Image (tube, rainbow, N blue to C red; front, side):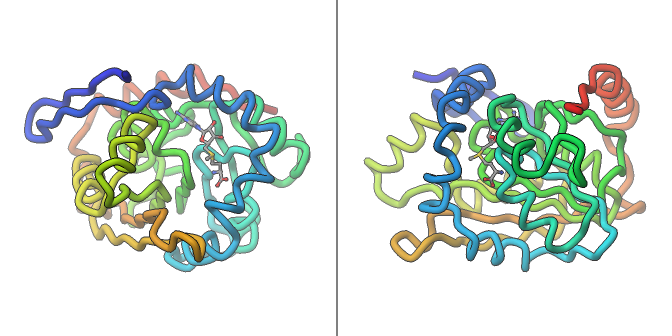
Length: 248
Ligand SMILES: C[S@@+](CC[C@H](N)C(=O)[O-])C[C@H]1O[C@@H](n2cnc3c(N)ncnc32)[C@H](O)[C@@H]1O
């Protein structure tokens, strides 16, 4: 049984977390999965789905893009078709080893060892933030979404691909015991709590399960959106920068 998370205040909410919604366990899981990840991945998250998700974004050549939970670099590879300024971050050294082998340790893509909930970048660093297949492991997805928002320029876009919640009760219970699965209304709730606007979703998947994934694109409010988190955000950013570990 996983831990339960309780969010109080206007986002009042309780749920039992899946066993892999834990950073240490997810890191251990990927220590082993990384060996076969690129062979298994295409069965649930393939190039057609990646292209469909990329189409939801407006990336121009020269845009600076971050891939959060980049793993072995499958999303990173797709992002590179749109801009050369791509950065990848992951909390698994084993997954990053595979990414380095593909892209080089000192190649065009800069990789960082780090945590989605405490991103080691200054605010307004990126034009676009992308994350595919990682949110389901984040113990506090709203905190991580707030981080994505903080490091994205006002008016920029954040795209998150996650697992769509199964309709069947049994499959849903099994899914929930493992990790975060969510539907559109839950995605709306999380993105609103993190302070995003213009939130849109699309379900996608391979032919045998065409709605297995939910992809959400949301916009960071423009300058007139204000900085409701004020000094707290600034303090956290300064802490993140001190602790930042660039992986190269
Ligand atoms: C299913 S893989 C997705 C990899 C890649 N984005 C792709 O599209 O194939 C999930 C990745 O998220 C990473 N991850 C999980 N929790 C994380 C966290 N808190 N911070 C950063 N990365 C995390 C895992 O280490 C793993 O590499």
